[in-house]
Image 1 (cartoon, rainbow over the protein chains, first blue to last red):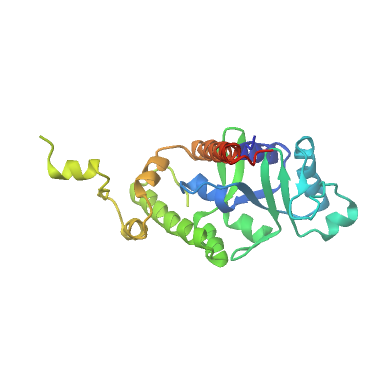
Image 2 (cartoon, rainbow over the protein chains, first blue to last red; image 1 turned 120 degrees about the vertical axis):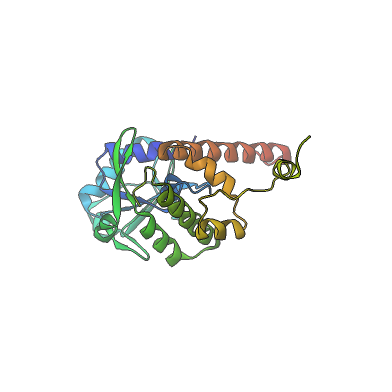
Length: 166
Length: 74
């Protein structure tokens, strides 16, 4: 059974350098749309990629966009050449991006992220304004609905001055 | 005796909260169910992610049930 929250916990526990982006980050802020994957922006260094591989080695990670859904088996050459990884695992889909449209590479993304508290520890999450920029850059119909919700949520949270750090 | 305003709410009329700003009103005007967002904001961020897991499990279960009904289940 899919457990996207477990994907997040495993990334944290494996000390993967990443920031949560996309639909799951939007859900974190309060968007109501259900998402079917975890999207992260991560650093594409051999060390970091191998942490991802280790984190999911017991959950049959595969490159979900390859014709035969090739298993994730990193080599030195592959680590040098990969710019993104679209994985399916027993826990659900994990898309790892080296850069985010509308925001930039991992360094730019981390500058536009905040550390947020989770039951297992802290993870970076893309700030709500940058998340809207990223959604705008992609611009699919559901991205535009997400932007409308994020704008409303940001406005409400600012008005109420509740726990929120956009 | 139920007044008309309460009856309208019972029938699904959304009452704009007093602190609703322009972005909130615009989202509502675009057809987004703002009452669901209000409920979601009462949860912690982690609870929102867990709710996504639950919703996803329900979607998968419904898909499997449909496949059984259609005779296409593996």
